[in-house]
Image (cartoon, rainbow, N blue to C red; front, side, top):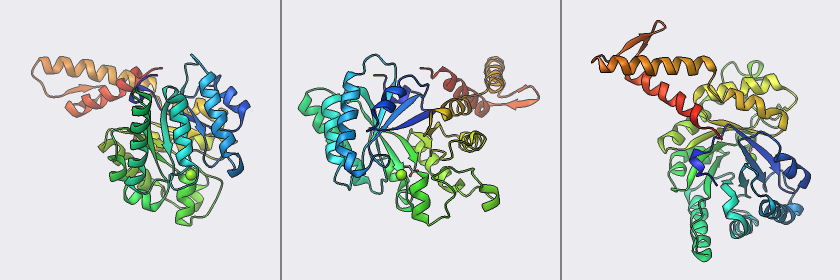
Length: 307
Ligand code: GLV
Ligand code: MG
């Protein structure tokens, strides 16, 4: 398993854990991460079955070249303990991260962190599985910085838009997806504050920031618009709830050729200029100084983060 912070997280395909055919199908798709779900896409009477299907699927899937995460049930539920124990005891080596939904308190992250430690000790091997923290409520957002800093195992913050909307009592357009009907509804970007808060807390703690899914999967233009909004803020990626969404998400969350060319040029010119004792240089009519140089390096880092 690649260490989790080296794995690109542009597209994260959510697959209901009890749907065996969908688990198999995910192996042939181009998502950066396949997220096997045990939470809201799995009915209560199928939780145990879903857990078993995911364990069997992961145990028998070898050399797939895929990176898997699993969304367990919320910590304050009847299922989370068994979800986490079964997964870690049986196939921790195949699970890049556990996604913890609806997190509102650091104690939930500490609980998962300690469980991972405890299973590591009982197995006598280091478990590298990371934790992804899903922010889905005003309470979670109010503590977003603390939650981001709660464990060394944290690797990302995830925006859960559907639950967040219901917690705010917003009007519903479809299951989820900012960008849809937004202009008619509210002449600003109503999620700007939430997205920025999640992004800033993630970056302040060295984590990735993952945007919510776009629920209207027939509307690919809407998806693109929604993805562009969070990509332009700085988000790393977005959940996909349908295979047709993956390629657009991968494209939008990758730097464009124009951005790469500019970054390469900025890097080259700036490095030459600094050898000559200069602090800035003009590239294509734009000023490139130390800060712009660092921004260019970030763009090139994204290009190098390949599977
Ligand atoms: C995801 O969990 C969401 O609530 O949007
Ligand atoms: Mg949710």
